[in-house]
Amino acid sequence: MIRDPNAPLPDPEETLVPRVFLREPGWKVGMKVGSEREFCHAIAPGDDAYHRLSDGELFVYSPEEKLCLPCAERRGLLHFEPKRLRNSMQTFEMGGPAQAGDTFKIVDPDDE
Image (cartoon, rainbow, N blue to C red; front, top):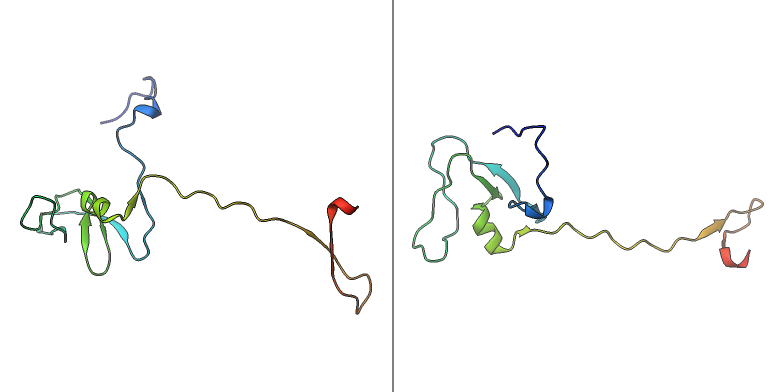
């Protein structure tokens, strides 16, 4: 469905589809295309057999297995918050050697 460009944008707080992050090494995201039978390699709670991936369904996969998104979430592969930025490192200024053979010295900006 194409959104009417004159319609107001939906409230971001009311979005039903969350942002999803996959940060596990070796895992990728794919989409099931076509009618060939492919299965999720996990058994959902309450089921007694593997379940099929549907045409157009997004899934995660590694070289060994494919998982539908609900099973990947149960396995703990999916995250719903972005990684936090790391704290900035303390910076310092280094005074270069004045003459050949001199060594570097650390200059404390508060002492200047």
